Length: 90
Image (cartoon, rainbow, N blue to C red; front, side, top):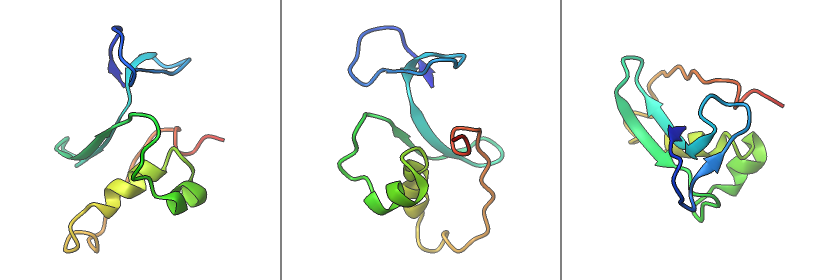
């Protein structure tokens, strides 16, 4: 979450988080902190992959879509992904 307290239609509220109001941003970073890909959550995504949403859930679908955006020569490389309980919670 990127903290923001003004008025905007993309602003999100998540109860119980340290930053409750702001923009939700999905990011893929290297272990050294370099940003590889990101997406600002704007509500319903017209380019969403329905198969990913059914198989992995709405929270994980944007991550899977960003992984698909990797160039073809990079996709077969071994990766480790680390994330918080947003993806593992029930």
